[in-house]
Structure formats: structure tokens, C-alpha cells
Amino acid sequence: MSEIVPAEQLPVLPPPPRSENPYWTYLSSLDSEESQRTMRFCLERLARILGYPNGESVPWGMLRFQHTAALRAELAKQVSIDRDGTAAPWSPSTINKHLVALRKVLEAAWMLGQMTAEEFHRAKAVKSAKGGRRAKAGRNIAEEEVVAMLTVCLTAGDLIGLRDAAVIALLQSTGVRREELSNARRSDYDPGERSLRITGKGNTSREVYIHEVAARYLGRWLAITEDIRGPLFAPVNRWGQAVHRPMTPDAVAKMINRRRLQAGLPRLSPHDFRRTFAGALLDDGVDLARVQQLMGHLSPTTTADYDRRPGRQRKAAVEGLAKRLPRPEDL
Image 1 (tube, rainbow, N blue to C red):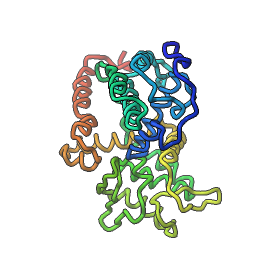
Image 2 (image 1 turned 120 degrees about the vertical axis):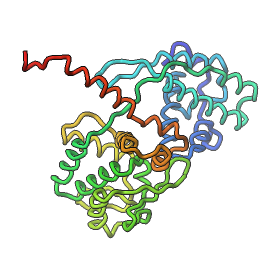
Image 3 (image 1 turned 120 degrees about the horizontal axis):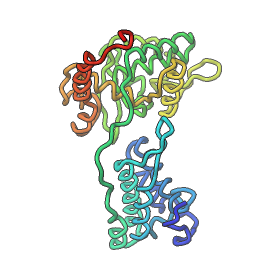
Image 4 (image 1 turned 180 degrees about the vertical axis):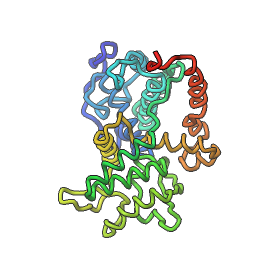
């Protein structure tokens, strides 16, 4: 709990009904499950700094500039633990994401009549964090790593392994988000065209395409579970039977983590397939506009962040220095 924003400065009141709670009003206005999960996580962190157990119990309409300014100062002190156990301060983008959540929940409080326009504009007037961009999170997945995960899936010889191999192949072929994969339905897939209708952020839809090899993995899963109606990918119960409901986004992430551990691979995420997909297309000379369409990005700037060609060029330049260093076996 923060020492700068003591809880006793704000009253502890029973949370209002959901229809009158700025916390739920703001979250329900977000179109995608991914956005809701991300911003809810931010609001929960802000609530803990304020001394409240959760976001819905915070009287957001009672926050004033002194509270939001103190929150801004506390966010600048936050640290996260890297994969190697090293503590690192939050990046400006992480801080600003929390500030966006704060401003939006204050806007909801104002729209609900829980603070005046002047109080709202003063409270949200905290400055965004500034700073240089850090290296992007995530990594590229090598071809042999995908092969290793597919191998452990198919070696299992069960329905779960067949499904997991199809999911991995689909992620490699399309670069879809895990939420998009979870929402995909069998009726969205056209085996003849090898196309899949995806519903993405903002409830927008787009067509993605599955290459021939990935279609073989998917086809095997669909054939053996043809009695399933609805979801493209379904959970498998303890009796080895597919059930009539979709895999959740969290289930997709847990499956990927389980398979990479079985394959003895370093940490990777479902979104790393998306990064690899975009980078590979750009490496192969596919134009940026086409990659943008396949990724479902609204802005080409977002797609350009996946371009790893400059990094490869820098790597190639450094490789030229190898001839200046003797090999250890030559010494």
C-alpha cells in the first residue's frame, strides 16, 4: 500500500451497483476481452496503491488531482521482475497504460454524475511518462522449435496432442491472436479455400489463410471431432472426449507453455507466433500493407514494429567481424 496516498484520505464505502460503478462502466465499454483483461489489471494495481482491495471498491468519483498526482508518482517507482530474476523499473509505455486506465475510469465517474466537469479535468491532468522506447518484448520462434513442439504433441498419440498440434500449426500459419483463435468457429473455416474468418479487436472481421501443411494438421483434428458443433478448438475432458465449448485464451497460453516445456524450449508465448509470422512475411518481401491486412492492424505503424529486417542487417554486419577473431580450437 502506498505511503503517499493513504487510504484514510478517501472513505471506505460499499461499492455502488454495477450500473453505477465507474469501474464496471468503463470495462464494459471495451470491445475485446483482451482490452478488458488488460485494463482491469491496471485498475486493480491502481486500487492497491490507493489502499483498496480491488477496483470496484474504489470511490473513483472522489479522486482529485492530489490523488492522481500521487498515483503517477507511485507508478514511476514500480518495478517488474525480468525472466532472469532481475528487477527493472516499469517502462514509460507501461506507466502510460495505467494512466490511460485511470483517466478513462475518471471519465466514467464524470459521465455517471459522480464528479463535476472541473473536478474531472483537474484530476486527469497528470502528465504522461516520457522516455525512450525499450526493446520489444517477446521473441522470434525458430523453425526447429516449432518442429519440436509438434513432435511432442503427436508423440502423445491422443486427442489432446492432435488438437495441440493443430493449434500450433494454425498459429504458425496465420499469426492470429489467442483470443481470435478462441473465438473461431468451425463454420468460419472454408477447407476448399483454406481460409478462416476471424473476429478481431473492435469486433472487426478479416480473412486469414492457412497454408497446405497447417491445413493437414487442422483437418485431422476436425475429422476426428466432426460431431463437435460450434468452436474450432474445444477442450478435451478426462475421458479423452472433446466437449462442446471453446478453448479459452488462457487455456491456449497454458497449452503453449506446457508443450514448450515438454520440448525443452526457452520461454515463449502465443503472441510470439504472431511476431514470428509478421517478421517472416516481411523478410520474404510481402509488402507492409498486405501484412497489415493479415495481422488485422488498424495502423501500418503497428505492423512496422514487427519488421525485423533492420535487426537482421545489423546482425549480418557484426558477423563480418568473426574473421578477425581466432576460433578456440585454433589456439
